[in-house]
Image 1 (cartoon, rainbow, N blue to C red):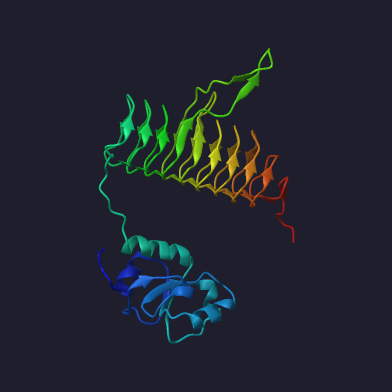
Image 2 (image 1 turned 90 degrees about the vertical axis):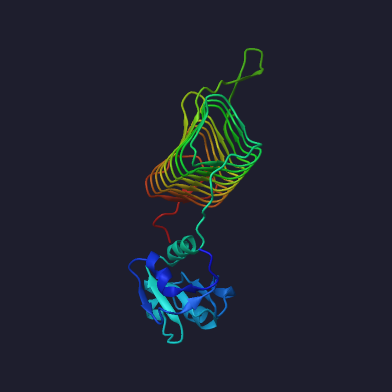
Length: 303
């Protein structure tokens, strides 16, 4: 959508269940943060307390998206206010509407592809990436530059892998031999990445030793994350930068692993678990728990 000016009425077509107070026919040029906006921008605020009064008063933007929960704190008749359940999600929808990411698929001529590998024609593979043998890459995927997708890896549909990732390398597994030498444990599993997964730059996901490493639908992995051999990550879980998921860890659905967390090998996390920043998890975690610290301990239901 190549415009320099946008009509609010048009943009509202991508939102549901909102309430607007003000002018639906107002226009804007850009979407900005609330503390860096101009009178030509649309902005948003997620605050749901009295602090929102000052932010709305100080912003130059004339169009602000706020939470329904903030409605009782706002009394501003000079601006157009859009109330919705999730303001940040509304901004995402508007950005995707205004700036659609429309690109033709391609495979760069510097890409190296192994034998018996299948890449759907709708997917893109960027420069200097190496793809091994017997790899499957589904529809509408984007593999960034300088990635290594090793043998037997399976990648579903709508997967985004950013630059510098290594997917499917051997894990770190050794056994002390009869002569006190380290003997490498063979890795005969593979990595299976399902649909709608995002993987940040310079992340490493190891293949399984005997079984597969599995990343389920909707998982989002940040930059610089390590996921070791045989780990299984449940649907819609988020793993943030510098986290380390050790071998054979099981993480349930809808979990949040904060930056710098370490999860010991073989640990099981239930569904809807939150692991705090910099935590070291050494014991299994039940569904819905919130843990933090070294070692990580539950803080749920504590003041």
